[in-house]
Image 1: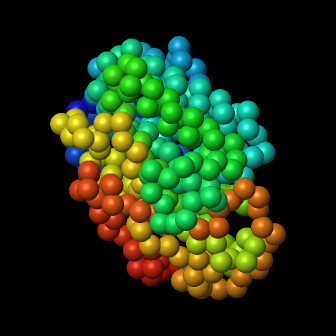
Image 2: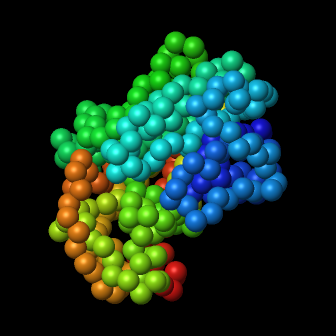
Length: 299
């Protein structure tokens, strides 16, 4: 199968690219290296790599020729930077997503798998969070990612382009972003511990998160790429473990000193996935436990 991965030099995307290549698929990568959260970008030399911006339709459209599956992971993917710069977030997450969908449609791509976010559930829904709950977008990031969901649904309903939408829950693991104060908390705490600095706990630290390993996210994407599995077309699926931990729990697992920082605006207090739909439709089951993974990392 010929696959295209947008954001394929970043955290989740590069892990997906590596796995697709192991499975002997032909892989094309688009990434513009715009994220400031990475120490490095991860271009696999066995893929066909393009350093392009998904916001430039004319630059990217030819790359989709003869592609069977598109995995769309390129995004402005962090809440706080999106709050500071909503215009660029909207350009990447909405216009960029529309460009990817239109290029896929024009090239006759079979299926587009879109990476969205559990931030769509906001504060108004009681966990565990189900896909049929109303959206409650609190910030430019979640609004723009949900606009991408709507574009996917529209391209399926109006144009017949097959789409599958995943809402990820707090992804961590190999190649996770480490730079800056807004890096995802698992990587941030591990970096702070390794540098001999205290872990920076936001607010009370009682916020709870459903931490999901990147290998489980990759597995869900590959399962969804099965072109014969028509039941998942047009579906929205939670990709989370169904277990959550507080930020203080995470700090205790890693071990070391902690300091408190003021609370941040527009972030949910509790994140917890109901993942029964993914288990049923994809036969997907998360395999990695956060506590065991941290133990094996020997921080």
